[in-house]
Each structure stands twice: as structure tokens, then as C-alpha cells.
Image (cartoon, rainbow, N blue to C red; front, side, top):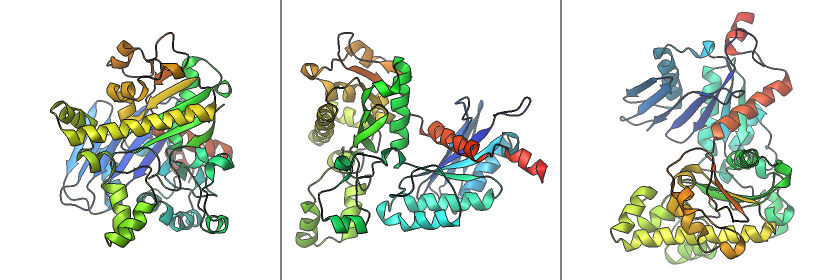
Length: 417
């Protein structure tokens, strides 16, 4: 805990992509975001870095060669703002890691052995784990005296029931190659399910929930008493709902057909399903605001992309209503889920016989923050709750440090040397 007169402790949360680093400095105890920003187009001549702290918005443009240069640029922006990290109560760096495989599901202190294990898991998440490892290695070099903690997207779904987690393929091959449904966006699904219970004033263990995380990546989960019983993503983040650039569910026979008939390589097919499919592949647009504009202008391809997206979403909602048997609350979150009233309306229209009725006025309200959007007479409550994965990661790191008895901030560490 923070001692009298000391700065509140903070955690620097890093989300490292192949050409970007998103970051946020969070007070896990209060939930306050002290600073946030992003470095984009790393390795290009047109790189940019942004930092927002207090009432200051700092920008830097110009070539940023690699991830190490990116993180050093972030620290330079902090100094330019007069906010040195060693005076901001920094106790840990938390890294979002998409795939933890079977064994990694608790917040884990980074060491060489962990980095080696994450590198081995790269084939399970080739777009996500390698840049995460790179970000971890860079942060360890730049901040060697600060605990580095990995928090896994798959952790929340680690204990999925076997019937949900198991693919109906050869058992020996599945065991040898760690093939199962892992689920992703777990940090968000856990956070939202807890926030929904808090919003309703109902103990978490008393609620059956459906959480719909709809962003560029999209996933759904069914949760009983705070424990997930099903989720839409699988071995990789490609399964399930239609997403911004990812296909979601497809017949696996498509892969074999394209390999044989179109002579596409495995790499080309994987790239197509991950990067050139989903809403982008169908409608040529990833931004739902632009997609709606094109639909209004009469674009048939935009309309089809939207209809396919909604159809898949409704299928999963219906499936999870059946999985749960009885459902207390459905919550929309993430960029599309929080901000697109049309998606929420079209996903739930006509489901009154299943116990779901929206209040159109509440759904169309421009309000932000956690809010109720279902009608008073709706047996199932429908909510919109903004996700905050950075806060959830920061709190996971803080709890891990407390469990290990490590609470000193960076400045205090230096003073003790």
C-alpha cells in the first residue's frame, strides 16, 4: 500500500505490437490513468509518438528505428513533460501477452525461462506473441531494476469445462501439440463480468452472464458465477465472431481447398484469414462509422459485410443463451460494443421471446460510462460497460507484487541501493 507522503504506486502497462507500442501508466489502487500514449509505425520514416499526461499532449514525429528506440522515446516524452517515472511511484511494468499456452495463466514475473517459453508458444499466436516478447526484452534492458510481469489474455479461460475446451480431433495429436480452445480477451471478459456485478449490486457468484467484447478483435463468453463456461475464440484469436480483419468461424475445408485448387501456401491462407477477411475482406472497410455511411449511400458490399457480422453475433448470443440455460445479464464492451448503437440494436432485435428487450432511447443515448440499455420489462438485463484492460493488468501486477512482498517503488529501490 502507499505510505503517507509517498506518490501513489503505479504500473506501466505495455501492449507491444509488430510496429507499435501502446502504453498506459495506471494507479492500480485508485484506478486512475496517470498517462497514456502510443508509438506507431516503428521502423518507418514516418514514425510518431504521443503522450497524454495531465493537461499536456506531447507529440514527436520522425523515424523510430525499433522497439527499444520506441520505449526510450516514451521515457523522453515523460521527461519533456516534467514527469520522471522514478517520481511517479513506478513499481512494475505489466506486459499484455496474448497466449500463455497450457501452463501460463497466472501473472508471472519475467525471467529468461519465461521469455524462452513465450518464444516456444509463438506458433500458437504468430501475430501477437513475438512482438510481446520483443517488448518484454526491451523493457527489461531499459528498466532492469523494475519487476516485469506478464499477464496473459488466455488466463481467464484456463479452466474452461472440458466439453467446451476440447476439439473433436485425434486425441493424441491434440495432446502432443497442445491443441485446445484457449480463448482470448480474457482480461476484458473478467473485468467486465466483475463490473457488471458491481453495477447491478449483485454478488458475482449469483449471475449468469454473456459478455460481448466487440472491437477490431471480437469475442463472446458465457460466464456462470464469475467462471467462464464457453468462449468464442479458440486455439488462436481467429475463431468465432466476424472481426475487423479476421474471418471468425470458417469451414476448415476452405484451407485445404485453397491449397489444392488455388495453390495458395499455408502462409498466404493464414495471412488472408487474419488480415484480409472479416468486415474488411467483405466490405473493404474496417471502421464501422464509415461502414454505416457506405450502407446509407447504397453500398451492397458494405451492407453484406454488416449483415454477416450481425448474423454471426446473433448466432453466438443464441448459443450462449442455450449454454447458460438462464441468463441474467448481457454486456456489450470494447470499441464497437460501447459506441455503435445500431450493432447493439440489430444484434438483439426480435429476441423478446428469449427475454431480451432493449429500450431504444437508452440504447441510442450518447452517454458514456457504464449504463443500462434494456427495457424495464426485459427479463434479461442489457448493459454497456467500457472495458479497461490496462487497469485490470495493472491490478494483476500489483496483486502479484503484494503476494511476493514487493511493494517498493522505483525511486525507493534506488534510494535503498
